[in-house]
Image: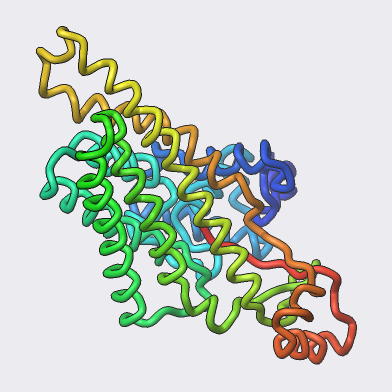
Length: 327
């Protein structure tokens, strides 16, 4: 048993991250909502085990499945760059339960302006925490920048939600008005994520060669990574927020369903959870976590950073550089 455990490399992914199927398995494993109730003490214990294994100390003689479970806890709750314990809302294991509660509320309570304002405020507060905790930690963001990003995203969400609601209430069918929450979420993602990670766009992020050595900075890498995150976030929300209104439009016409008025919000929340259990790993798996960028593009569009790259590599510039896109 100890011989088996000594062969485990805790830094080696358990799945093939070069394929969509492998990334889907990895994120389904890492975002398992059952681990959200694990205590902080147990999470720190998992981190200590991972760090011991990294140093080559595998004397605990744990079974492979025990090591893998500790790796799961570590990957779901600690920042990949800094190793710090994420706050509760920012943990990957909280994405499904947190998302289902908030999205269920947005879909169930969309008919009045105060309800729209309340749920968009809650949603953007949650998103701000998630975006900050899953940023590229090598590009610190000031409190002022965080505040501007939060206010801008909340404002854009409210403008989109209230604007669409007022316009569609006059021009569109009641069914179309159910898509107001999705319009607000999509608009806010286009604002929130770039602003929350603006330092990466302004100063660039670290890029590495294929051996994992930092060789320079790139703003284009930041823009590419942030763009992919925006697409993933919208894709994560789309099925639940686009398909569920169609289902509810039919259900709410049934006399049996209309008699049980209290079931509306819990039922929608539960259905959203079913969508998210599949869509969270799917959306996270759309693009590789470690993205790459052709250095010839850097040479064309950011020549000053390309010159720094040439200096650091002593003229031996790699064809591609790699970076963590964030989540």
